[in-house]
Every structure is written in structure tokens, then in C-alpha cells.
Length: 343
Image 1 (cartoon, rainbow, N blue to C red):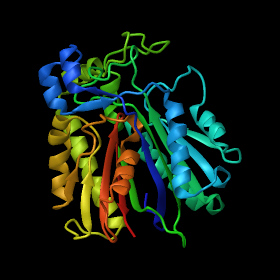
Image 2: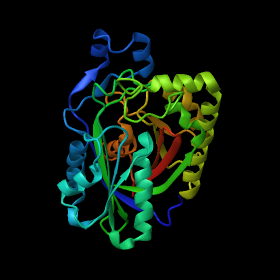
Image 3: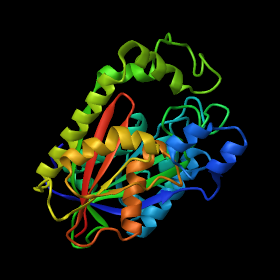
């Protein structure tokens, strides 16, 4: 989506629990195999006691306070997630809005799995341009990958899952400025890859019908046995090229633009990033420095993009006039790229 004008990002916040399950402990407890731990490359995964929506409320409160924005000034509230939100048939977005005191804006849920946070930012941007009176869009994410329904070390190939929540405010640029500026956001999908998370399983009448915990290894193995890795690898390379090139073009930047300081990776396993992401990025993003910010948290479900934006801002990584590409992807499959800058 080409933005008619840049938008401000204010108060980007990542609420990540302090409790960690270290890779060393997981190895000693037999919860991950030695070769798998080496391929994942995480030092630890974040582990929460709170439910996902409770974490989202905490992240959102910090975001609003940091931005100096009242809940009553939020024109739309979007919440994205990947995994279970704590109740079987229930709206987490409405709970979050009610807890925050957002009563005059419609809460909206966005479930595009790991790419949900990026999708919510893109949808929020569109809403702000369609309804300028809304002024502020609040985007939250939250996921908790707790047992017994999820095995954070073994439910997937190439990814370890950490708990946490994020929040940010998207708004038109004004005299008050912004922490970061969203200059472009682009998304591409390859729907033919949906079977990677369906495999050969029949449609079932209830959750976890086929196994006691979510098992993406089983479904991916079935896909790979039928199709091999080539279709996924080709689609990922092509779609990443597409979203990066489109974002650079929309922002008026070239591949080797001196202002392009960073490319920020999703918080996936080390081997997955090295094999599927880094070669494709290098072909279209020039010599920008690669940032991998997820070694101590793990993959935060729908929250990787906003968590990476929060770290870009909180650590002061971008200087005035510099830009970063924030890359993300999710099952389905979908790839997104946010191009952000510092005023």
C-alpha cells in the first residue's frame, strides 16, 4: 500500500516478561535437542504468567503514557495475535479497549498469524487516511505460548516462541512530531503455501483434535514430502524482493541509499534467517546493517515488527534522517516490509 503521506509512530512499546527459559535449561531438561538448539540460536525464550490480553493492556498503557495521548483520543483500536487469547469464544480486542477506557472507537481483531502485527499497522494506516477525524490508531499485539497447548521449543521447525505484547500509536504527522515516521508499508502473499500449516490433516471439529499440542512440524513435514522446499524458498525470495523494492521506491530511496541504515529481521531461529532471509535481503537492500534483535526473547508471535520498532526507538539506533526496513512474515504465507525513519 502506497501511503499518501508519511505517518507518525509514537510510543512504540514492547512488554516482555522478565522470566526467561534459557536454552541451557531447556537442553538440560530435555525440552530441546542439541542440534535444534544450535540451529535456533536463541539464548532464551520469554515466559509469561499473564494471559496475552492482560499483557496487551500493560503495553498499551505504557504506549499511551509515553505518547501523551488519552484513551478518549484513540479513534480505532486494532489487536493482532497468533495463538490462544485465554477464552474459547470471546473478543480480546474488546477486553483491551474496555480495560483502557477506549469507549468511542471500534475494537478490531486482526488474525494473520505471525504477520498480524504488520497487517494491523497497514490496516490502521488505511483507516487514518479514509477517516482523518480519527487521528490516532492504537495497534496492539499479544501472544502467550504456554503448555500444554503449545511447546515453545518443539511445536515448530526453525522457530522458538517467546511471550510478550506490543503497542504503538499511528497518527498523522503534526507539530508535535513522532518517535518514528512510517514512510512505506507493503505486503505480498503466496496463498498456495497455506498447506504448510494444514498438511494432510482433515478439517476437525475442535482445536487440537489431531494432537495434544499444536504441531506445525507434522503439517510442514507433510507439505515438504509432497512439494519439497523449492516452492516455499522461491516464493519467499520473490515476495521479500517485492516488498523491499516497493517500500524503497515508495519512500524515494535507492538500494544503496546512504540513509538506509538498518534491515531489521523477524525474531526467528538463526538457521532460518541465514537460509531464507539474509540471501534474499542482501540482493535488494544493499549494504544496510542487519539487526537481529530476538536472540533473548524468541519469536513474539504477531509482535515481532512492533517489538523491533520499540527497540529501534528505545535504543536510539536511528539518527535524524536515517531509515530502517523492518521485515516480517507469517503463515499463509504473507510477507511485509515497513520502512521507517527518524525525523
